Image (cartoon, rainbow, N blue to C red; front, top):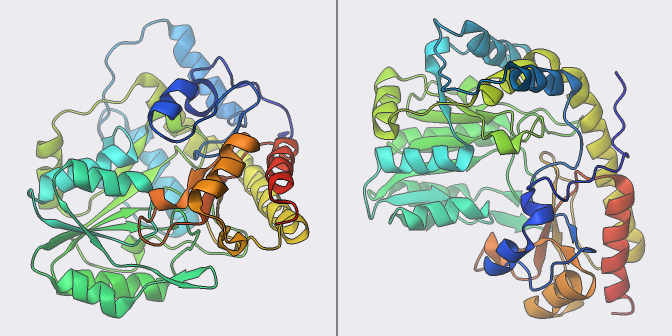
Length: 398
């Protein structure tokens, strides 16, 4: 089936966070302006219809007309576990056992539950800034200590400062490391050598790794994503996988953890208590992993072209903006600092005058994020062009 990602999909009136919740976004401090002409390209979901097999699977659930409690287990619903196992075996050569899979209602919730299960108040949680904003807020909201090992920015290409990383991991108070791969917001997809080195350091200093790999299917066609679990025998590892980003199903909160160590797994499950999916989630996961590959191949090609379109637009209309092609994710991390404007002036020009809603750099990095903006590009190309044309017009002549 051929999908049309240039089709206009009207999302207003669908309870969409980014299209319908302007008052909430203002209350959260994300923007001062939100109206009928706002273009919101700030959050990581797609303005595309999901794959037809997923639509059909969800329709069958609706047609059943009973939406009672739903549970999954390797013995009762093997098709759920087989779909996940076969997907990662086929695409990443990763052998997962059914009992290792633990369902959680979303990746941020999974990270929170891991922090609660394996650390205590005041313990250090290691991150690499700039980093996905909810990781920092989750650490703070659980009364743990943020331990930042700043990524090295070499003209927009980010690498791990391994000397600093080991120094931070070696601190007796550091108990857990949140690995983000592919990395949000920089777009780095860590190499096997980089991943192995981080894992070795964590193992040496007995630091638990929680690996957020939910963008792993969304890498560029010239990039290979490697799950950390395929590189190391370190047992203190929890991997977050999800259909949420891959198949545009964020609203279903379908995260599946892989926890190979049985003691770690039992401790996590006991801490979380009973977590049940909806019937929609179960149906969507099975359909996505069994029948969604054709859609994914097409959407990845469209996203690659959209990223190239934005980079070419910036080169022609806004050459002062520094932005590298991300190896993974559909996120662009743009550096506006060459305009020599304050963060507030940059924000006003984009969010108020252009009426385009992005996410400001200081949310991802309170120390070095000023002048940066994050954009998520999975929307139709015409709207992306309108958004950047509005922004470019505001910076014309500067």
